[in-house]
View (cartoon, helix red, strand yellow):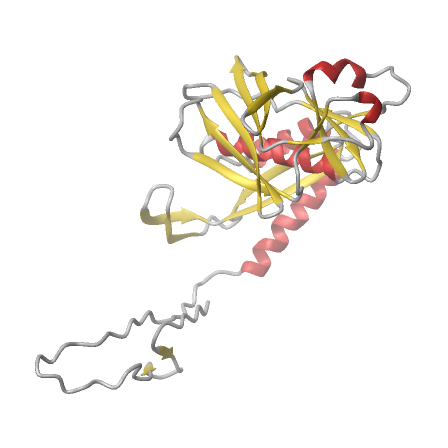
Length: 300
């Protein structure tokens, strides 16, 4: 692996000996006090050969995955079939990360699927996945704000300010909510922020509060993740209008999200290879497994 890094100086490695070249950035004057004008910062690149046949191992994992897909594609419960093989081959993914991260991408993935629908004039509906919250508090804030013509999604545990948050973006320029069913296709109101408060009761996620903020004035939104997709945009729904978007009204087609699901696999090296590597999760260098991470998507 070759990782060139250029700072003030340039480091060049050959097959023999390393050589360092650089240019003086300023003429050093012979001052009486001999002050130093500056220093060079150098971080050398390097190569390392390892005894590891990546192509052969990847081929082995790929062939095994193809067999799993063939065995599971006609199963009544495809996800359960994949899980059975993950247990059988010890391909389960165990990641030590904050639960707020999982909730963040659970929300973003489903929201994006709704945003990317080819259909217009439809209502999409979803819930967050059930999950066991291992540490308290079990309440999470999901906060949406506009930033650089995109929508930033922040998730943090608890309702107190100053708690660490995790964020990512969806490609939606404005956050619009509708408070008039008859004008749902043409009119809308821009929100400065939208906030959901989610509490996990057992494994079940419950929306305790959904509020849009407009110039400091709170507007109550539907406590269901219920959105109206029109003109390639998402419109949030005011609480008083929720009943108008229910199933059964002829103008509404409700689509439950996700329509496509996925299963993640984490396959360890078939040969059991390990290497000394650094991982920021435990801030240490030690022998670690080589792990191939991949996923399979399938229709709901």
